[in-house]
Length: 621
Image (cartoon, rainbow, N blue to C red; front, side, top):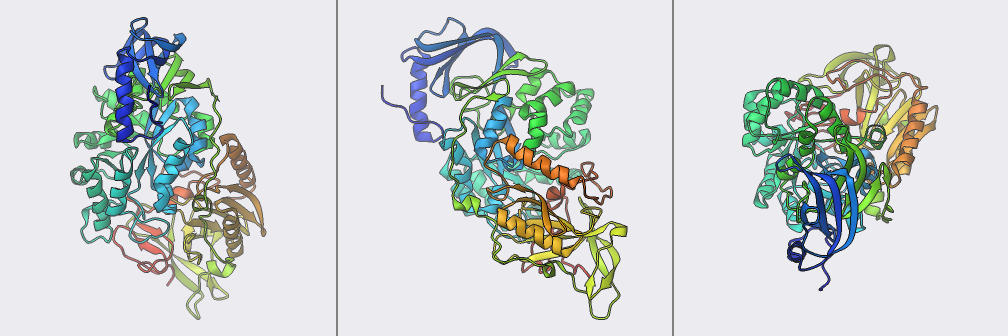
């Protein structure tokens, strides 16, 4: 027999040859490689269980499915798992792998034992760090032999707004190129800058509509992001503009309004229980327009909670039958993302990705198969993680060609003033207006006010080499303990360095520490680093096992317990007292944010800008 192509990556020419072979294997005219016998098999197309079934495989794919003993051909190896129930490998309809802080090959080793065999990568994180190499980055692990399939969606938010700049800039030409380059590219990542979509006067209008056009031309999926969008006119406009989905809904009414206008609803675990219970009470019968998604989850949380399996258990606990919850991580997302020829079901032509359960109601996972091979038993990943030598474009991404000093974070006062009015933000500041406070002046510089929970916050450009810095005052976050600063190179979604601190010198030391590490976290006190966590790949991820990265994070948390952290409640129910880890998300610039701090740019020289209107304002006056 002629050697078949390696189908680690999907392309049309090789796909034809693979399927020509699968057809002959299914007819018994060519031998199969292996057959897996299971006690029950879930047909997710009809939500039916079938007893005593065989799954016949050729290479990485399924060739035949049916009753045990009925396959007409020869089989090289037969495996008996009749004590187990088979369901398709779980898929993520919307996930930022970068938020696990693991490179793709180590993310795969973490989540595959939890049943997660394929992921639609919402790729505006690494895209903003190195846009030109985006597709190379996401396909490298698979080419190296990783069993997990990653379907990249290039980011619409590259840059997130017209007032930001850095390592990537995507428009029509870039999106067209990505979609034409590979069938693994499924569409356009969540369109977040809604003001730029509806307003022709917005400076990002043409860029975003160029990406949408390119996606339509290649029959890709335009994913949406409708955070805070509840007005019916806005929901109608959002759907009319071509956005296919939303993962930001928080209430039953919001879901119903968006569902009625044709949006595919992607439920995250923190809001899923209330939404599912409310929809069941309201009589929701058809769940085909729903998926469960992770969006963002650190490896530390995955080690504690699980991966896609956790999302399924949350849905089951909220009242969904296991079969519907399983459809929401298999066939539903595969249909939505137009990936059903390859994933989403235990059916011929699909990759042989199978989760074997010894108890369905509790979703107890006994084994996971991927690419036609067993890859884990219980929680133990049974394969070697591919060794990848990531090049400099992935590992040398923090470009600051000088030492920052305390002066970089000082905010000068006008001559002769004892106080200055200051613009103040607080985390998750979803307001049309910023806070204004009078702050004291000392030695010609505007001062923090710990007694009123006012600290200093800054964004440092990590792309140009110049280390351009914008700074202002924030309320209710950061360290109250003197001479302390916390810095991180993960600052959604532009991923410049953010730093918050009780002294300018500590802020400079924290940023310089991150520069030397090429990204991660740095907690500084009294001139020395108390704890660091390295994200040496893209300033977002680390190339090591999840347990090793988690140990470093736990050491950071332990040191942070010795610091007094400011806190004030804000609009978000997910903003908590203590170590302000979610500051990485408080730097977002997408809707519903208005006033934000970004790295200095020609359109916002001090970095303080209303991203909904383009209005700028001094940080002190």
